[in-house]
Length: 433
Image 1 (tube, rainbow, N blue to C red):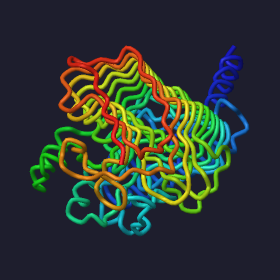
Image 2: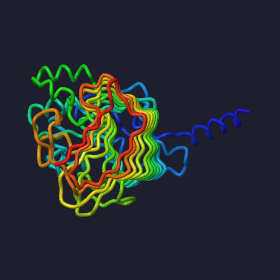
Image 3: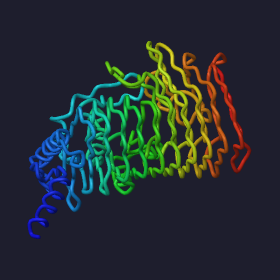
Image 4: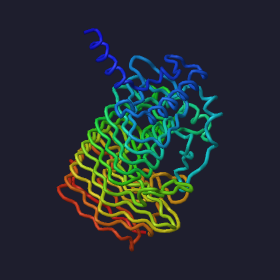
C-alpha cells in the first residue's frame, strides 16, 4: 500500500514540475540592481530549460504568486511549445542609471514620430524567432514606466522601452494578464503569424501621470498624450484575433501598422503585409482611439488590408478612429478596412480622421487641431486608400467636428458609411490640397 501511494506521488510530482524562476536563483521583493540582474538571468535559464524539457506538461516557466520580481531586459529566442505563466508580479527595474548602461543608444526611426529603436534591448520582455508560445497567468506585467517618463521629460534623448515585444513569432496565445505602465508601447508585435490575444487588461497609472505633469509643467495640450507613446498595442502581422480587452492609456489604444514601419534592416519571415485581423469587444478609456498606421510609404511597397474593428467602446478619447499617413519615398496601400459598431463618448477632437499623422514634428505632420486651427497639413499622394466601411458609428459629446478625410485631389479613396450619427448631424469634411 505504501509503495503504491509513493509511486502515485512520484508520478504526479515528476509529471507536473514547472520551471519556477525561484528554482533558478530569482530573488523576490528586492529592488536592488543585483537582484534585477539575477532575476533576468533566472528567467532566461528557466525558459531555456523549459524549452528542452521532454515532458510537454512541464514546458512552463513560472513566476510564482505572492512575490514581486524586478528585471532588466529578459531576452528569449528560439522557443517552441513553451508557456510563460505569470502568477506573480513581473516588474521592470526602477534603477534608471543601470538601464542607461544596458539600453542601446537612442536611434531615430524614419518619419516624424522619432521613437527610440525598439530592438533587442528596447523592451522589458522580448521573445523572438519562436512558435507555439502561450503567455498567461493571474499576475501583473509592469514596465515601471514612471521611471522612464520622468527621465524623458528632463531630457528627450533618453530612451523609453516597450513592455512586451514579439518579433518573428507564430502561433501565439496571450490571455488573463494585467499589463501596466509601459515605458513606451505596452504590446509590440512585429512579423507575427496567428496571434490570439484575449481577456487582457492594459492600464497606465493616472495618479502618477497627474503628479508628473504638475512636476514638469506639462501643458494642457500635451497632457492628454502624456505619458507619450504608451500605446495599448501595435500589431504588424497576419491572421490576428484580439478580443475582450480593456485599455486605459494615453496614446493609440490599438494600432495596426504596416510591416515596414520603423523597421531598420528588418527582414519579415511570415508576411510582407499586415492583413487578416479581427479586433473586437474592446473598451478603452482616455486613449487616442483605434488606428490604422501611421502608414509609412517605402521603396518596397507596404500594405495594410482586410482589417476589421467591431464592437468598440471609447470613453474620453482624443479621437475615435484614425487612419494616419506619413511622408516618404515609395508607395503604400490601405485596403478593405471596416469599422463597425462603435460607441464613442466625449471625444476631445474629431470622431473620424483620415490624413497626415497628427504630429507636427518632422516632415509631413500636422497639428491635432487641424482643420479648425489656421495651419497647413500636407498629405501624401503615394498612399492609396480603398474600400473603407464605417458602419453604425455612434458619437456623443464630441469636442470637434465628426470627421475629416484629407487627401490630394488625385488621392484614391473609396469610402462608405452606414448608420453613422452624433448628437448633431454627421458631417464629413473632405479636404483637398
